[in-house]
Amino acid sequence: MRKLLLLFFLNALAVFAYAGEATQEYFTISNMTVVPGSNDVYSFTVSLNNVCRRYTAVNMDMHFPAGLVPDTKSNGSPKVVVDKTDASMVTVEDDEATHSVSATFDVVGTGILRVVLMSTANEELKDTDGKLFTVYVKATPFIQPGEAHISVDEIALIIKEGGVAYEPENQPNFTFTVENESTVPVTVSSDNQWSTCVLPFDCAIPEGVEAYSSSATTSDSNGDYLVLTKAESIQAYTPYILYAPVGYTHQQVGEVNPAAYVEVAVAGVLRGAIVPQQITEGYVLQNQGDGVKFFNINGESFTIPEGRCWVVVPSASRPAFALDRSTTGISVKQNDMTKSNDIFDLQGRRVSSPEAGRIYVIDGRKVLKLK
Image (cartoon, rainbow, N blue to C red; front, side, top):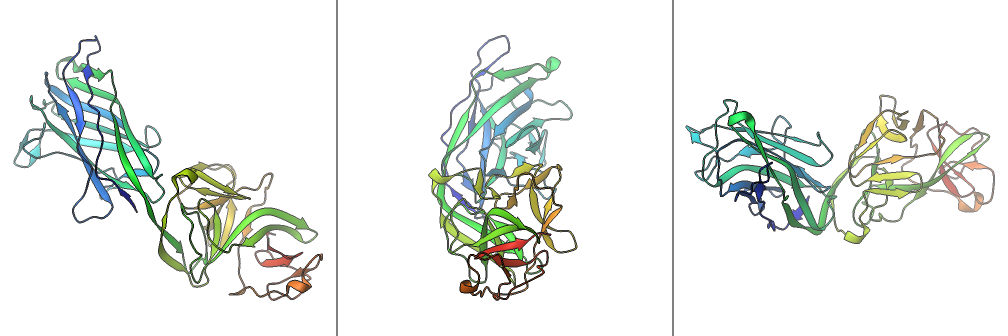
């Protein structure tokens, strides 16, 4: 959850006809406010002012910054609702509005909220200033702190006769501020025991959780390995593989450094999504019924949600990186495992036939046996 400062700095929008005839109409947007009873849902209202002709419909695209998303209705659609107060541009009788509003998000383009306000009976809006609709939004934990903007374009004001549309020459740009503190849920299911994470701030590794980075792969006559390095702490914008033998769920809180912000965090073979990523190459962590593994997506389109990671191993074609853990702690005899071609388990015992999906130590490095 992220806190937003509750004020939009707004620009008025003058509206011009296609023929170039200037009108005195303009849009405004209200202050952003917290929705009563909610800690993380905000709303703002869009109004049309100084109207000089009767319109039947309004269309517009709102471009949200990464990390700002619409709140949703029970059916999953963006929560944008017609204003039904006395100040509304929509005639309201017996709690039924003449117009309805529909909205989509991430459909016509990434981060775009498209809003259409119209009447199925082609009825006209009121001929006075008033409110059009209210938009409900949330800031994700990964939104970049500091000044953020919502720009608006593709505006069409449509009149009844002939369906003529009027389009603005100048576009509005609304500015608000995102606070630095962020709260991010970190979860490792007790069934899977493995997960991934990337956080926008530094923090200690939670008790009961182990965090690993991976910077390289290696191989020998016994197979291929993903080299694992146990982390001492979690660094901001750094991807990790997590292990929790009994699972883990908690809210991590920290201060975000705006200067460190990236949309994709890169460390070794791991990639972390700060903004959701659509990928077609790499390995994603899944449980497809036979245990948790990093599965090769083999060119299929796959969405990595914010806060999660995937693996990129150039030229690798193996179907999966298996994950398995046979011990709840790491206790190795380092003096027996340095500068040697021998393979050891995590208890420091030499292993002649390593098994796929288990962690071993070679030359003092922890590695994951892949196949």
